[in-house]
Length: 377
Image 1 (cartoon, rainbow, N blue to C red):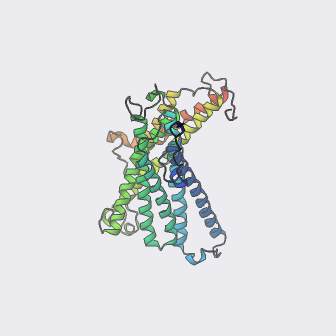
Image 2: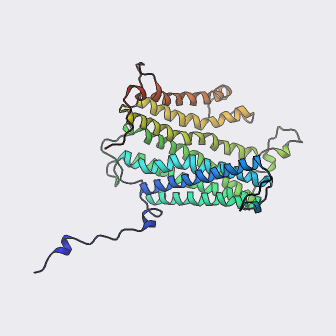
């Protein structure tokens, strides 16, 4: 008698291999874990660089295995410190909290099945890997090629960060609309988003603004080095300096563009951590976040003021106190120095949601709840 076993029990599809499941997968969880592993590797590599710096500070003439052939010139030590800082700032402080934890948890917390653009997400990860390889390679090259490769690697990382920022912004905003192929959880409107999602969303907007400027600055600098253009010529140096100092000045335009990125980068590293800590304290204390909407507004203020503190650098350095970021030329010199205070006040609101005293009418979850750090059964 003919049986129906083949149709009742169809053969299972072949399982994908290791590369397809991990390094080549477009799944947001796999990409998030890959970012975290990449950041962990960068941490250990940066620690090794830090150890080398300390060894050379204590024993300047020490000959280390596999590294003695590179020489002990000041250029080599400068390359060591530059590589250490680049790894920690770009591959650890930026990639881990935003791209690592964000890729893994953001779709889960808004009820989406996947990130908005999975293929772009995978491309951003591999651009980050190539940036890490380029930054590491610079340590083994002579100064001039190393500088060029460092600029290229930073530009590649900026492009990857822009893709991640675009992905996160579209995921948070558009995947909640009805009729989308990847819908958000029912009723998950913007005011109901978790604090962690707000932190990643604000960070994506801030990262899209500052990394685009740094990418443009790196492209212009590469054009000067390779194509003979004059985006950063000597004539644009500090014009108010005495004649004997101007030859040793730092290019003003590059300093402006880099500070535009560097000051806001502090908050790009901080904002996801504030969102994660607030969410964890609320979860394990089994209490809602104190004044959740106020904390969301504080995170938005941190992103806004942190972006504008670039103008305060111009004021404090004497380069240009009249920043176009603040309206009213007569009040700029007064408002710009207050931007760091406004940023710190916004951070205080976020921290207050953790540590207000228990007898306060605004009691925070950290004290008024019953913390339980056991895993869910």
